[in-house]
Every structure is written in C-alpha cells, then in structure tokens.
Image 1 (cartoon, helix red, strand yellow):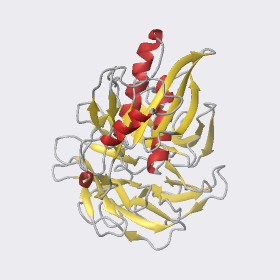
Image 2 (cartoon, helix red, strand yellow; image 1 turned 30 degrees about the vertical axis):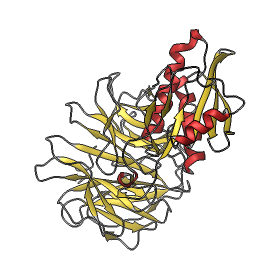
Image 3 (cartoon, one colour; image 1 turned 60 degrees about the horizontal axis):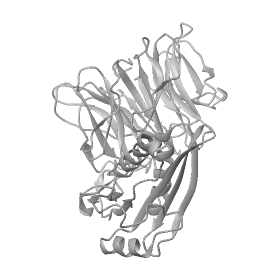
Image 4 (tube, helix red, strand yellow; image 1 turned 45 degrees about the vertical axis):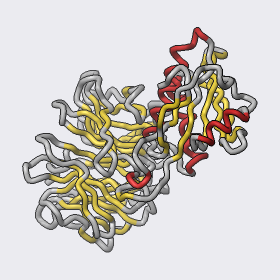
Length: 433
C-alpha cells in the first residue's frame, strides 16, 4: 500500500555581482516576471597578508551567494589598484561614488576580515552609491569564515531587495557516507556537512520544524518505525509517536501548533495530526486507499498529500481538518511526494514519465497550470523540497549513478550538485528561515 512513497575575487577591481541575464528573463517563482536585477559592486576585502587565503574565501563565498540569490547582476570592472582607497570604513569617497553611478552600480559591498580572540571577525559594510553612506555596518564574529560571508550576504539581500536571504539556511538529508544511513545536515551550498544521528538502523523522511530548531524523522533504532524529534542545538532526540505499523513524514504546520504525518496504525495508510509533544492525536483522512506525504500550505489552512484513491498515486489537497478533499494532479499516472511552495501558489512533486523514470513537476494550486521542472534522461529525480524564498528546489537524483542531492530553479535551469563526497544521499528537506 505504501510502496510508492520512496522511502571570487579579483585582487584588484570591483565585481558587480549577479547574472548577465536580462531582467525579462528572470524567473520569480515558476513564472517569468518583470524584475530588474540590482548591480552591486564588491570591493576587494581588507585583510593582512597573513590572512590572504581567508580573505579570498570570504569574498568568493559572498559573490557566490549574491549570484545564487538571482537578485543581482554581474560584470567585472578592472581598474588599477590604488585608484580608490581600499579602506571604506568612513564611507565611499566622492570619486568612487561618481564612478559607480556612471556605470549604473547602485550598491557597494566591502568588508574587513581579521582574527580576534581566537575567532574571525568580518566587519561588513554595505553602501548606496547615491550619497556614498553606509546603510549596513555590522561586525560578524565566528569560527567559520563561510558562515560569516553567508550572514553578510543575507543582510545585503534583505536591505537592497526586501527579501530574506537563504544563504544561512540548512538542508537536511539522509546519507550513508559513514556507513549506515543517518540524518545529515549541510549548508545550503553543500558545504559543512555534519552527521546528526548514529541510529545504525533504517531512517526515513526527515522533515524540519517550523522554526528550524528540530528535525522529525522515522527511525527503526529500537526495532519499530517510530517518529522522533531531533533537537539541532543539543543533538538530543525524543520519541514522539509510536504505534503498530509504520508512521512517517512528520510535517510541522507553519504555526508550529500541529504536526501532520502518515501512519498505518489502523491498517491502511492515513493522515493524522498531533501536537508537537505527541498529544491530541487526530485522524484527518478516512479512506481505504493509502494517504501519505502530507505537506502544509503556508497559511496552515490546507494540506496537500499523496493518495491512490483514484487508482494510481496522485496529489490531493484538503483543509487542515480533512474536509473539502480535491484532486490536484491529472497529468500522468504516478505522482507523489508533494512540497508546497513558500508563496503558496505551487505544489512541486515527483512525477513518473513515460519511460518509467521519476522527474520533478509542479502544479498551480488552483489547477490552472502544470509544468515539468526536469525531464529526459534515464535517471530518477525525487523528493522535492522548496527553498524558503521559493526560488530553488532541492531534490535527490541518481543522474550521475549513485543518488545525490541537487538544487534547481523552478524553471528547470540552474542545476547545482551539492553532495560530492560519495555515498548514497537521499530525502532532502530545506529548512525554513
């Protein structure tokens, strides 16, 4: 019944960061929209000669983050070092402001990197070229230079675009790089992976809590497939739900008040919800077919799920109490693993093509449009999960042999491979902000 729920920088110069695509080619969510990318200049960071390697790393990470945000455009402007001062703590000099405005650069980013008290400090500045004054001025301290640059990027994205950045977000997934398949975390760009469990048993369907502080998952660590919650800060886990049969795919409501999940506790697979402490268990689907893989709408008023009540597995939507069930997908005979977009207008899912391979598709929630995100190739793309800004989707794919974790834009462009360290990597889940 549940088989288908498969279980940079140049040493001299200013770099304008973003994409060379014209504004009309920018994708906002899934559909094309009119959005003018921002030209932002990244002035070479300041650091002592002994910290040159770390300086270059910080600059490179910032540039990559701003490029990936899809909100900034890029070109490279070379000039002789010394034309402008490289210490900008007092603001942009008039000549730099005039020059930047001449080439239509609206913003400048610069930072000083130095060690202090056994840690690294990134003294980060963001400037509007109109006036030359700093609009961002913050000291970011920590042990990981990449994390410092990620935070700087998110602050730039937030100020200059009004969006919240995603450079500091994490992705959870299952990996057997260390032997048994365990819950593992990595940065959104695939760096700094860390194993979070040592269950040495079957683990299924990791899902983030609404506030990114916990991960819910199913583990057979004590023999039965029970649902556990893992505290990210402490590494401690707690068994939340145990029942006869299998229970999986715990999905937090955006409010944090409820957790929906699928369970065969009564025989067939149904959708239930409970409080995060395991109390107030409520069954919300009542159908002899298999109902699986719940995902909440951003409002918390609806739940999308997979069901084979119409024959083959398809995506359905119901309200949070289980009423008003409607079918969302009608194209294809096999659709599963829904993920609701943060903006609420699309549901991505895994769809089987005519060759029998799983690909990524998405439907508008109102049912008016269905698109293929990935297509072609003799491989499987599965387990989609939206980035919190709705501009990317993380998924698992065996397109290069062993299953790995990738990201892609909803328009099917911008494929990035995140896992390269070997092993089998599956079931990704992108953390909320």
